[in-house]
Length: 179
Image 1 (tube, rainbow, N blue to C red):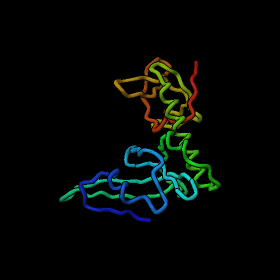
Image 2: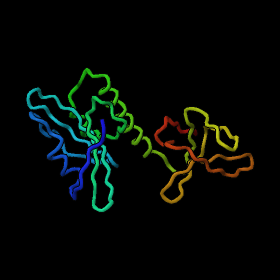
Image 3: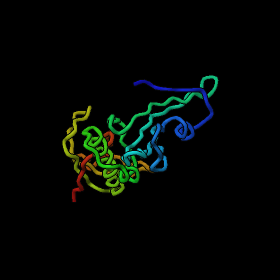
Image 4: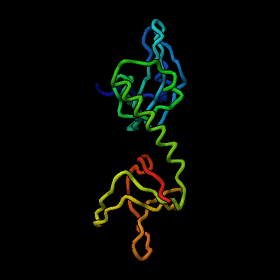
């Protein structure tokens, strides 16, 4: 499926009110926008089934504002999995494997974000596997240093010198604290 778009001054929330509900459907939650993704629970008024609407969107301005979107539901297994827990909790159980996998990925993301809040300056952590870096180092244990609002992973050599390493998405990995 492709993207749909129009030239408009409306927001994705305003577009959603008119574009995304079908017959025998009503909103079951408030909308949540995270990054370029719109999440909202939808209830089928005939069956009572509640599913999640996931809309990827982006805007671009050439001469005037163009809003582009791609709407899907949780049975399509969207790659975006930042759906809030408040919406996930009201979705009805389903036998659809794709939908269940997507919901599980969303819950894992929620748990990873909760764990990320536990990270403190000066902690020593171990990642699930060793990472090989371009300089030849191969490490799984790091010292966490906070610089401003950013946390960095640092390695310590035999002389006590700190080396900063770039590890994408390390806060959402299954790290453990090392005492």
